[in-house]
Structures are given as C-alpha cells and as structure tokens.
Length: 307
Ligand code: AMP
Ligand code: MG
Image (cartoon, rainbow, N blue to C red):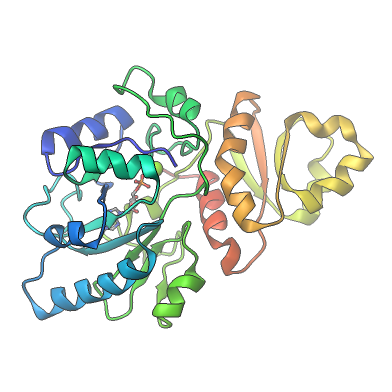
C-alpha cells in the first residue's frame, strides 16, 4: 500500500494530509514508527487501565512488528487532536517496508500516513495509482515498486480486556488469536460500530469511481454474463464461463482462488476496471470464512450505497 506521509506530531503538517485527500476531519490517521520503543511516548501510561492496554500492545508489537498490524491505545499529549480526529486513542504501526522505515528514520519523528488516494477511493498499490488521484496535490512519490500485500493493515484496539479487531487486514485473525484466543471481531457495517470505534468501517470506502458496484453470488453470474457489465471474478468461476464465451474477456478481471493472492491484486484490478468506464461493475461475493474476511470487508464497502 502506498501512503501519503507527513510529520504526525505537527498539526499544520497533518492538516495538509486531510486537505490533499479531501479526507473528512473525523477519520483518524495512523502514526508510523520504527519499533515498540518509538510507540511508547505516543501512548498514555498514567493509570492501571492504560498500563494494561500498553502491556497488551507490547505482546502484539513484539510478535508482529514490523508488519501490517496497527495497534490502538490511549494517546499521550504528544499526539495532536487533529491526528486522532479528537479521539482519546491513537493508532500506531511499524511498517516493514525498507523505504518506509528509512523515511521514518530520516524524518526522525512519527509519520502520519493514510493511503495515498483521494478519500474514499481505491487504495494505491503502485506509484502510478498514486498519481491518478493525487497528482498536483502532493510534493513527490517515492516509488518502492508493487506492494507485497495489497490490503491495508489489520487494526486492533487493545484498550479492552480482550483486544478487538476494528478493521480486518493484512495480518490474519488466526495469527492474532494465537496470542489472544478471546480476540473479538467487529463486523463491518454492524449497527454497534460507532463512529468512535473505527470511522473507516462505516463509510462507503475503497470504492472505484464506477456509477454502480454490486456484489453478486457465484450462481447468479450466468444471468448477467451476456450483458455489458464489468466483472470481477475468481478464477474457478471464470474458467467455465469463459470457455463458453471467450469474447467476454474484455471487461472481466479474474483473480486467484487463494485469498492472499486475491487481496494482493484486488485494488490494481479495480483501477483497471475503472479505466474501462463501465456503468456497472459486478464483484463476485467472496467465500465465507476467516481467510476471506479482509477481502469481504473491502468489497462490501466498495459496493456500499451510502457514504
Ligand atoms: P487509512 O489510513 O486510510 O487506512 O485509515 C486509517 C483507519 O485506521 C481509519 O479509517 C480507522 O478505521 C482506523 N483508525 C485510525 N486511528 C484510529 C483511532 N484512534 N481509533 C480507531 N480507529 C482508528
Ligand atoms: Mg485509505
């Protein structure tokens, strides 16, 4: 994932991120640091409750940092309110990409860095994607090549007795459950997901600029097959249908039956489909189960009807 970085403890710098992305002020940013020691000054440790939260954070950080895990704890006064959208908790992560780590080292302070795309749109997995939505709004793009994992980090709030996954992502819930078997998962779109919990979870998000995006069950694809709609399918589904009608290949993106490979390619496929300017895109509903949860979350939001 390509990020749009700025000094995360300087309110004026952070404000420029919100401006460039057109990001709503109520959507908090993640601070990127090198390691657990860098995170400590960002988190408040002034009560037994806050201390217990940081102890849980340490267990997760030691296991999974650097890596695609974002940890939420109570924020210290070092972190400006604009960075956390006025929440009393801050999200922190140590990326493992060499370029990101060098950048943090050079800047010498935490980098606030959301995905480098206009707010609500598909997240970029190549430098070219970044320029598609942010050209002229940013100073430069550091081209680190194509991303290894194509989805955002997994976001975990550790302020409760059992950690809660607020956003499923690149780190699987099975890996987290090895350390915290009682970890909770907040389902996207659940009525209980309040704004304070994780703003990105409620909104239409990760959406291509296509007028209509619909999820479709595997068995129903045959019914819309002969129309002009764009399609995003899994390989096993597509191969039968395509053998009957190879001409359909034009506006059809075919991704892997493996959830990790599917996730890596998802956003790039959405960018390609966007360019064919279809009036409607059908995305094959992912299979049920934990392995597909992060993908299911993103395609549900890409096809959400409300902002
Ligand atoms: P993005 O960087 O665009 O992937 O978005 C970061 C996401 O992290 C937000 O949409 C929230 O879901 C989550 N997040 C960041 N900070 C917090 C926080 N303090 N509390 C809860 N969720 C947060
Ligand atoms: Mg984003």
